[in-house]
Image (cartoon, rainbow, N blue to C red; front, side, top):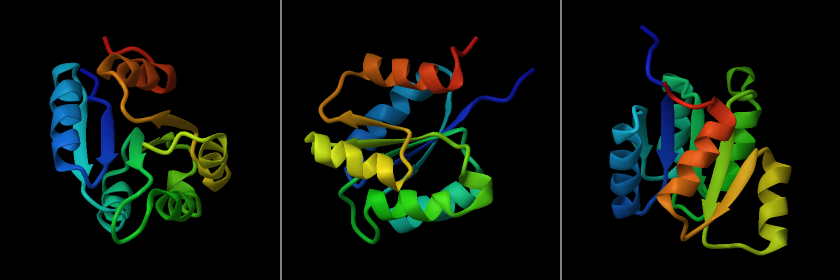
Length: 126
């Protein structure tokens, strides 16, 4: 039996983390959470998730700093990072991609959009 795909959610909005965690676990994913950039880096390096969703504006380290740092680690270079942010200007999206993000989602978004994004990077869970 295959292990569950592991997703790391990094966001300082506790309520959003809990909603997303519940929804993703319901769909069969193992979900890890972190509430700031520093904790997110630690969990990413220790847990080696299959995919990372990360807010841009957070305490300790923002999402762009975290993305840049993770992309310097050989074991993190192939892990998809999707930034989540209320900032939706083209320049914000471009900045995230320049830092190494694979994709970008503007808040608010629907849970179905999140699931479709996961499937586009990891494939459909069976």
